[in-house]
Image 1 (cartoon, rainbow, N blue to C red):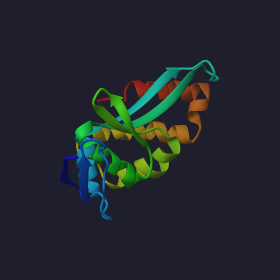
Image 2 (cartoon, rainbow, N blue to C red):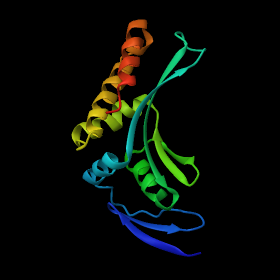
Image 3 (cartoon, one colour):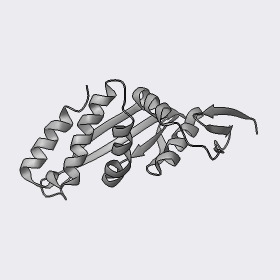
Length: 160
């Protein structure tokens, strides 16, 4: 099976065309490389989803996603390995995503990383808004009528 090698931020990647498996070195991705990559390719999102099983009829779901063409799926696996959370799966067509949806992972892993390693573009403003929502949810504010309304407003204005 033909394969090709690439180096991504300390990972030596062997991409086998058929299986798309990744072989990594013991090195970690460089945090500043991650910042630049997320500035360009990342998405912080908070959805308010109708759900009749919830007390107020809606569910608030925070999500951090990076999407890549299948030829670069090894980058998504490298991010998953670096952060030790999330999942890599098909986004649509020939696109894959690394997605984190767990509030504990946001508050303990993702948010502290981007507090220490600042984003450089408008994504930083989106992150700050996302961070505010996640911290409020971590305190349970989304479970009160007033807190839900406030978080819903913040989520609506998340994107710059």
